[in-house]
Image (cartoon, rainbow, N blue to C red; front, side):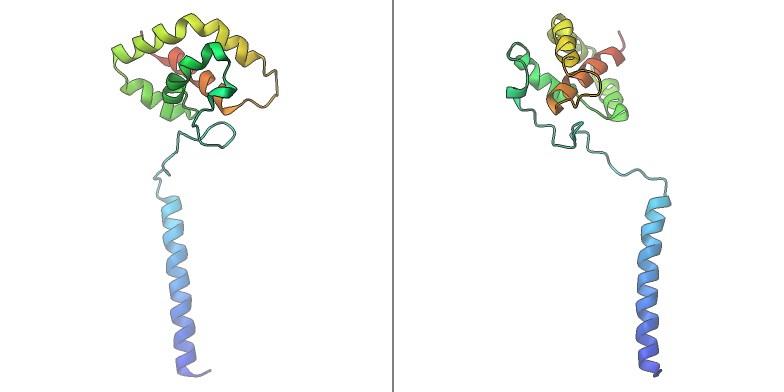
Length: 133
């Protein structure tokens, strides 16, 4: 093998090795990959389709969009960062509809696939349960 060929192979091997080391270091760094809490339960963007929400609950869609965070950590962060006034607004708006929301969610049955819209309402209810008084 000629010296030029050897150098090219060595350079290429070093470049690939450096790339792999960079990828491995990032994976092992302990840093977290930013989560996208707007991803719904079925992997779709959490832009809610109000036609998939019962008509009598559609007025709560903006709150479900805001508070219906599927990731436990992100939802906890949202709850922790909320003000008492924000929590009270959510409680007053959603509280009277709790039984109706639960009935809608129960209509999906055990093991049935839930829509992203239903999941957002479920996570909104969880956020309310996780809120301090």
